[in-house]
Image (tube, rainbow, N blue to C red; front, side, top):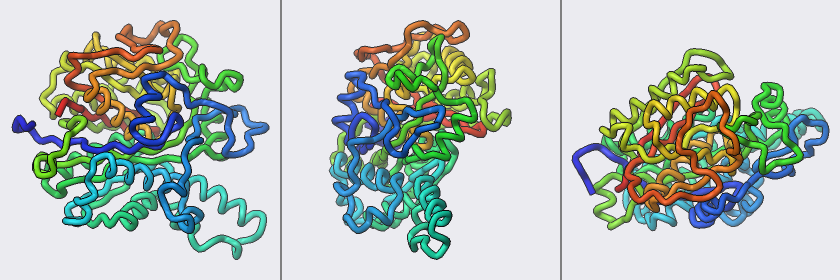
Length: 413
């Protein structure tokens, strides 16, 4: 299992997504190329330019937490706690928290935290006055509340952090978890991200940025990464938590890892608040740094799950960056099926990469019918899954609003 290089082994996966809850249902839906897009139902979108989203309609928080806790917790915290429980169950690793909770770390990112609760609280103040604000308003809104709930409910006593690097924070969370493992600060890390921002202010704000698709009459065809008709992303929600373990912990428990994280790269564009570097230098360098740390040459990378939002500003430079890494690499932009879950996206897509490496199968993307002229001609996996018997290494790479970039390398365990 070990080859002398530092690694963090992925032994459990928990997911709450628009196409299903739990690893098994999630992976089946991905391979079937099911779409999670549809009309917005979480609020009344009448009068909005954008009225479509990818909602987690199958998620019921009462299945994962005490009924009394539900109104005290924001939706992003509920999804995070559910994903953490699912990951520990998937790994069969509850004994880690029972035996040495101080050796279990916790990294749980979110780009916007309790945005749903913030907007709801403002409506209460506007309509009924400040004395009607509830006692849990602040603890529902604060970005670290999801990590706090997981720590309290599960008894985690090791190091913890809540990164907030917009759309890159889920990927960065994986890197922080990997760092804790390789430094010996933790034997295991509950690691992931959660986001629930299908709210009036957030939808209106992204629409004003001209970043979202307005194909309201065709939700399933709206997000079109690298396609000539790409017109923006479809906002989504969700959470993913991966249990990372050291080699010694894996050996002691007899665990069977999905994959291992062997490299992390982080960069900053220093270019623009909303648009990525048009030359893709930041995301390219993040991938190169991750591969260098992993000791993996670009030609060994068999699959990249890219940021792939379907925006004209992002698709072309990102595709050219991937071409620089490996012009023959298989690519599937799964936001075309899952929507853009903002801060959670990197955690969800790292889970996808781990499953792809384990199963040696690349899940498909949707809606790529005619490649945009300025996008690189890579081996895009569209509509049908692709068996990849030689898949040994994959990369998950994400860009965050503000110019934050993060990439992780996953290899067969």
